[in-house]
Amino acid sequence: MSDDTNLLIVGGGISGAALLYTVAKFTDIDRATLIEKEREIGAVNTHHTNNSQTLHFGDIETNYTLEKAEAVKEGAELLAGYLEHVDPDREMHSKRNKMVLAVGEEEVAELEARYHDEGFGELFPKLEPIGREEIAELEPKVVEGRDPDTELLALSTPDGYVVDYGMVANSFVEAARAEAGVAVHLGTTVTGVDETDDGFHVETDDGEFATDAVVVAAGSHSLQFAQEMGYGGDMSLLPVAGSFFLADDLLNGKVYTLQMKKLPFAAVHGDADVHDASVTRFGPTAKLVPALERGELSTVGDFADVFGFTPSSFLSYGEILSDRILFPYVVRNLVYDLPAVGKRSFLPNVRKVVPSVELDDISRAKGYGGVRPQIVDTDNRALDMGEAKIEGDGILFNITPSPGASTALKNAMTDVRTVLDFLDAEDTFDEDAFRAATIDNFPRANDDDTTETGASAGDDDSDTAGDDTDTAGDDTVSAEADD
Image (cartoon, rainbow, N blue to C red; front, side, top):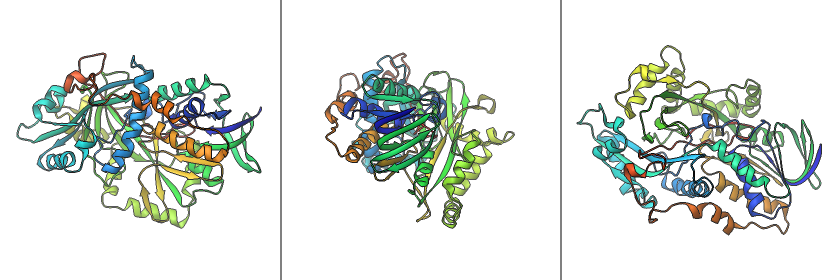
């Protein structure tokens, strides 16, 4: 097989799929091609078992600054608007109540300050502080069995979108395929990308492609591609595998706990599964793994490639992992995986959300969890919180840890502009049409059907208040994890 295209996208997870959709539907780029090594779209980190299923707005994520929350909010509203537009029957998502819970005097004071003094109440009009009685109405198990003298406060919102990002990625690709000039190749592995005088030559195990521009949206593997082409030499990766514990029907929606701001990983939370509200997931745990995909031994060598085994890599890892907050966190999360004591060690995290839970009520979720590529800045020997874009001459590499899935359409909008610059042609991006199909459909606080709060603002299919969950990031030829 040999093919020519204007844009070639490597990776069929949520990020690559969102870009293909945006290019195909809202630009006049003639030909766009997506290549995915798996035999289906969204099969790795984007798969609903491999992430926390959350659409992150920044409202209940207490490790977000106001500035970051503002940026994430727009991305989440783009995707939420898309879901409201194309998924009215809620096959790809559910919409339930969500809250962040403060337990004890110190946490209550912190959450009050966040809402009233730090601007989060103004940024999120649907977010409201609620006390013990209102918490109990929404989430009875959160209050049941808890010491009545313990102070409780929650920030609650009905915008708890619980998302099957794999299904969303597939919907993006199917919409794109309906347009002329779009090609999708599944079960096809990219073996090399070479620059040519007039673009790029891309080799795969199923033939060759000539393309004017390339976007690599392959999660952890994006850095591997970049370094093979001489980019990203000042970066390494800290791959973090997320896992979950399962319980029976304990929560109606998502309940977050307060986040330690220095940690780039999610605080433990409980939430009902997107497709089975009778299953409650608690997590994530976050275990460091020397691989770019969970359970794939072949990606251990890939991790070695991006680690680099240079003095700066070793020094960066040493400095990061010796941090007095991060090191105990890493050790605790290793313990959670031990067969005999892991569940018992994790139980206090569950009881902070649902105090009445007993040891036999929870079990380790088998086959759940992906790998999130946390970026390491080897020049500054520090974790780089958030996504990274490495831009070359006609080629873009996206590395998207959480909340990469939540901001997939916003990233796509940004990347389209970059691609148009690469092509240096007369192609245009119809941003008005893009917004009409996405964010313009997001229900605002002053809309008649969204002013309700509390239990009545739950999933359309029931009267209960429901769930949200964390990000799946880029999946493509790679993997990601949670919040």
